[in-house]
Image (cartoon, rainbow, N blue to C red):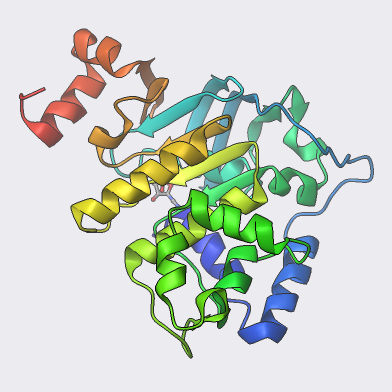
Length: 291
Ligand code: ATP
């Protein structure tokens, strides 16, 4: 089964083709047909980014619960890493926040307001998602960084590129920002694509970030550049990291261990290592005992 965030993004992102498609993509994001706003929803311009999951249960199918009674509070600006075995529900927790799916029981709030009371477009404008599979459409580097934002200035786009450590890559391309990429243009490497997706988020500047940790094999140098760009991206944003490799999330403010039964443990890396329980088990399974 496909990871829900991946699936939804593939669905949204396989939509556009070329420039005409790019405009359609924007319309599509604005209409987002699958979930309707109720009449009283509000567009909220500014949020602090506090996230609260209160007794959230969810199943993709009836009688088959993927999440059981999840309670989680994330402070504004806090980085929380979700760890746990495959199928525990880490991606599912994250995909409920932008309302890719609706909770069956309980509620999710941002700054104390139920996410169902946000205008969907407004809710999603506050959330950025970085994941391993980056969608690029046939267009220039500039259009691909600006993505849905037709009002982005040249200065903003270069700033985003610089924060994502992409400036040198762009300058080395035959036509710089105007270089065509995608099927009909230059092929970017996996690491370059990933940094382009990070530049998009810098430009969008959302208060909430979901990082679906890359697991693809990148060379060490590229991986370090990406990790550094991601660390910078997370500053000042409430960040949920879906972590597969525990080495990358040791410094998270809090690590939450998810199992099929719900959240089983939480704390800092050191606290959880000292406790010698679920996290300790996952960690030593990945790294042996050299801690
Ligand atoms: P991984 O580490 O492998 O990414 P995860 O902890 O993120 O796993 P989820 O992908 O959230 O786990 O999956 C939780 C449960 O929901 C699993 O039993 C999975 O099979 C199921 N599931 C996930 N996505 C879907 C979907 N689109 N349709 C039906 N079931 C799904």
